[in-house]
Structure formats: structure tokens, C-alpha cells
Length: 541
Ligand SMILES: Cc1cc2nc3c(=O)[nH]c(=O)nc-3n(C[C@H](O)[C@H](O)[C@H](O)COP(=O)(O)OP(=O)(O)OC[C@H]3O[C@@H](n4cnc5c(N)ncnc54)[C@H](O)[C@@H]3O)c2cc1C
Image (tube, rainbow, N blue to C red; front, side, top):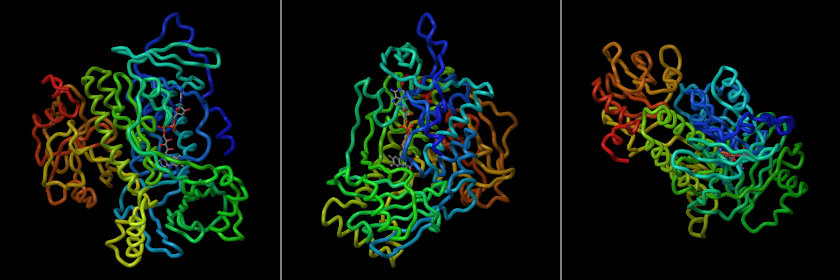
């Protein structure tokens, strides 16, 4: 494993751009080869949008960061062709337990709905995810897709222009300039791009510290998420246990605000904490220890002219709920198809404003959940603590109190309610798949529904007779005709009590519109709405 941290995965090579007589212009430049930058790059290149990714580093990120990746992330990365190694290496889990003091108060299962291709969550170290995404970059590059990853290329300055962005890049062989029609800033929480453009965050900083101890041990705890409120081994605070691949266990101890970081990070003190939790005779090695604090905040808008912010550069949350990288990958999912349509002239530039509005909406939802979890875990007053403890006591014996227990509501995709890209909805179809929701997977003839949908606009016709080769105008729409008759989960999720339905699905697999019956004009109009061409023609932005 040491090798992953140490080996340059995308070492510096001199690029012809460095020797060009004038700055070369690229359609898309991405700053940052973290999970979000890599996901955006793969998605764009697979749609034949030429993309250059620059990172000041040339290796996967060091140390312990994200470990929980959600079903939606697996579905998105699967659409990009890269989920196989994640599933092979990751630890699958969908169950958890909650403890209060010295007793278990209840357990839960995140995915009571069977029949999804992917589990509710996997645990996988972030460095593995980044490694697999770089492998995927190499695979599609070898297959002729226009993608280039440049290590040790550090963004040093940005100049904004009407129709492009000018970049100054530092390399081990000196600086050079580049131009980008669009810049995607995936350069992390301290985003130099954000700083260079003089932009900032709105939101809250939390006064708390958490110790991560990634511990290597052979242990027979089940592969579940265990969360303790006020445990005997960490009185007045909380703790979390999660299994990762390679027999690494993520153990988080809440420490409080007023701590001596140097003391807390001494190996003897960390070992003392771990023995108190795992028992005096427990045998373990420490893979990684660090103390983190966090903020719940976002930029006011994720688009600034020709610069789009995605992932931690745009928004940050507490780690409770695993919403950081998961929501960043959903940013990439939302952004790539829109940028492709804008770059090829099918959609107006204003479509990129909806990247900002839809993902700001999602970020607010994530920040809300994450803030509530944090406030529940760390009550800010005696009254809040009394309420929290009463909820925990009740939850032990009463099912109704369990939804009130908040140890981190786990990441789920946002439903883009109210988005101006949404077309008509139909109240006779299940509300869980309303317009704006991410399509849900289900077993269907020939495999899984999301595999059948893939990318691109799709018209999903369920038990409908369609005319042959309907014409939908400027954009290609793949028609997926399926019967739900022999597929009860598919029927329940997509039809409910209805006999048939039509779903218009966006390239990021969110529902754009749905009807009970086919009308080519209605589909064409919904497509125009989904691409923001309808409003552009009317002169609205
Ligand atoms: C303790 C902890 C636990 C977490 N657990 C989870 C979890 O379970 N699930 C989850 O979804 N999320 C989790 N997260 C959050 C997750 O780690 C982040 O959300 C994720 O890394 C964001 O990815 P990113 O690609 O936006 O940014 P980063 O991963 O930060 O990548 C930014 C990239 O930009 C590059 N860069 C920076 N400056 C420059 C420059 N000037 N020029 C060129 N390149 C530059 C960096 O080298 C880096 O490669 C956790 C975070 C922490 C700290």
C-alpha cells in the first residue's frame, strides 16, 4: 500500500503546449485530479469533449479521507465504466448499529429494497478510488478518447476574459500559459482558483475536533457502521467504527474543541484510547492518525463566467453522512453533459447557470443534513443535550423515535425540485421518481435498468407502443422500450398503480419529464426545457 502513496501515478512530462509560440487554447481545462476532477474529466472525454487535467501533485492523495461511497456514486462511476475495481476492492455494507452509553439501542438496514445492482454503500479508501479513476483515464485515453492528465502542473494565476480563461501554470521546467474555453476548478477545499478570483464561502465553521485512527487489525466485528453516543471509553463525546479494505478499521473519536493537538496525536495517547475501546489485549497497528475539524459552507454560486467550481472547492460539509466526495461526483455528473451540449452548440451557455442552481440546491440540502447531524452529535446547549438523550433513550424501545436519531444522515442524491430544466410531471406515477429525481435502478429484461439507460437523453417507454423512429429535433434521444409485466420491482418503482408510462431521462439519469401516454410534441418541448433552449429562444436567461 505504501507504494500507492509513493509512486507517481501521472508523472510530469513536457507538453507540446510548453513549446508553442503562443498560448494554446483548449475547450476544457480541469484543475485538480482528486475524485471530482477525475470524474468530470472521464465523463467529458467519453462524450468526446477534449479535456486537459492539471494537478500540482502526481500521486493519489496521501492520508485518510473519504471512505464511504454511496450507491449513487457507484451508479455514476459505473456509467463511466469504472466501478468494477471499486466493487471488487471495497467492503460492502448496508447495516449499522447505534449505541448510547454502554448499550446498543438499535440496528438498521439502509437498503430494505432488494434488487439494486449496487449496494447502499461501500467502504474504500479515497486513495484507491483515485487510483482506479486514473486507471480509467488511461483506459479511455488508450481507446482514443481526448483526455490528458498532466502531473506537477500547478495553477499559478487566472485571467478572466469574455470567451475564455487564461491560465499561468508552473512546472518543474518553468512556467507556461494556457487558455481554456471553460475552466473547471476541482482544486479542493483551499481552492487556489477560488482565491485567485477573489471569491469566498458562506456558512458555518464548527468548533470541534475529531481524531482519525486508521487501525490495522484482524477483528471479527461485522462489516457495519457502528456509532456511539457518549460511550464509556470516550465520555461525553462520540465515536465511530467502520471497516475498510486491507483489514484497516476507521475509528473516529470526537475530542471536543479545547484540546492540545500535540498531546492528542502522541502515539501513546492514541493507543490508550484504542485500548479503552477495543480492550486491553487488542492487537493493532496504526496506519494513519490525524485530527480534523470541518466547516459546513458553500460558494454563493458555482459558476463565475467561464469558471465552474465543483467538489470541495465549491462546498464543504462535515464528514458525518459521507456527503463530500459523493456530492462532488454528483456535481461532475450534472456538469459534464451540460458542458458537452454547450460546447457543441446544441444548448445555450445559460445551461451552465443551471449547473450552479441545481448543485447549489443540492449543496444546501447536504449542508442542512450535515449541520443537523453535527448539532445532534454535539448538542450546543443543556436543553439540546437533554432532548438528544431523551430521543436516544426512547429509540431503544420505540421505532418512532429512531428517525430522530441523527448520527449522520447518509448521502442520497438530491431531487432537483423546482429546477427550471424540469418538464411536466404526472401525479399518477410514483412520487419517489418525480421529475428531478435520479432514476432508480431495477432488474429488467436483459439486466439492470440503469445499464440499459446509460448516458445521453433517453425516452423510457414502459408498456407503451411508440411510433417507429420518432423525431425529437436537435438532440439524439435513445428510446428504451421495456415491459414491466414480469418485473415487479421495476413496476412498483416506475408505474405504481399505472398501466404504462413514459419517462424522459437526462444524460445524468435524472428524470426530466414523465407522462402516461406518448405525444411527440410534448417530448420535444420537454427536451427544449431540459436543455434550456426553450427559455433561450424566448430571450430569458
Ligand atoms: C476525515 C474525512 C473523512 C471523509 N469521509 C468522507 C466519506 O466517507 N465520503 C465522502 O464522500 N467524502 C468524505 N470526505 C470528503 C472528501 O475527502 C472530499 O470531499 C473529497 O476529497 C473532495 O474531492 P475534490 O476532488 O473536490 O478535492 P480534493 O480531493 O481535495 O482534490 C483537489 C486536487 O486539487 C489539486 N490542487 C490543489 N491546488 C492546485 C493547484 N494550484 N494547481 C493544480 N492542482 C491543485 C490537489 O493536488 C488535489 O489533487 C471526508 C473528508 C475527511 C477530511
